[in-house]
Length: 493
Image (cartoon, rainbow, N blue to C red; front, top):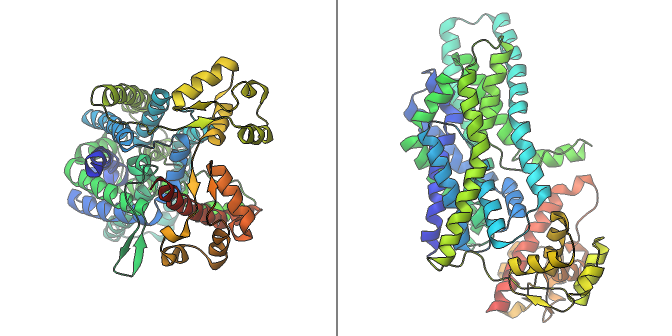
């Protein structure tokens, strides 16, 4: 059933390719500087590379927004997002798959009673505003630089044409890589918590994680969508919103590509923090919004007279309705999937408020007096737990999110005999492996308890303080997730 459930993710990937490839080469194809087949081939290849190599950065934020833990649930909300994007594509609107998948996740949260992490949601929504503005600023700056360069060098028209065509393909390749790195989280991010694939060793040369395998499959689906159905939307972006010249088409693509890249680059985030600058959140932003922002920026710097505001309004209306429609479709389809087709859209999750949990919540500044009335009671679903909590206190969503995090039962049992030593040593440092050995034979009732024990067992498991430790701490968190999955599965077996 794994591949059946992944079909909706592949459909969403196809929809993204059909719609969002326009944001990479729509301006180039619309101005007839690059042939559609060339654009589709370049985009497909570099989308795959970007997804596999750099796709992990933006996927974590979607996981924080809502950890969909059952493949049937992932299938349903991905299908809801795909149907929404496909409908908008039929209307020739370059909409945001980011908005569609976020709407789908919120629909899943509402259906299952899971809390929505408003910190992550605010971070994501802020980029819906920031990305087109940032793209417009980039476009204005790059336009002025290119204009100055052309006036100074006085390149012959034929030479300029050749340089522009080559640059459009080169920048398009960069844009496709950035699209894969940033937007693969929209396609396969909801399947990551359900973890359908195990790590795969490829010929002894390198190991592909389960997440990378997911991203590869999703990226191939994007490439197919690009080649089969993206031409219609390319013409909308390339011709109808604002008449672009080949040079301005190049500027629009470069501006949009830069926006996608900076919202997906973990190294750029680490560099900014190390130099005392505010970090840019790693979230899957809308390539549609970025390219439209870039086109508008070019239109404004040239006086704003050529902008088709009717088309812009139509596109903007699509951005507003996309998350709402996707959320409603997701909620309705989850109901039918669970009650008509009798599929598990959310794994049964136990929550309890034991004394140790209540003490831990007190450390998080959560009012614990209302919780003491529920001490040692067990709850077998997020919906049941949420309803009971709200009967005793008027919690806000952030408080509920913290309570859910620490009350969730997640049994772990460290049994090193169940795991080949080589597997652990290949993925952990010697110090981390030594720390893990100290926990052999111990059981834990909560994920946070297991994490605390790891950090006490060895300093190599402790995150480093300071702004310069971002990449180290990110790598450490991935190793912890590797250990969590191994010993949670071992316990279940």
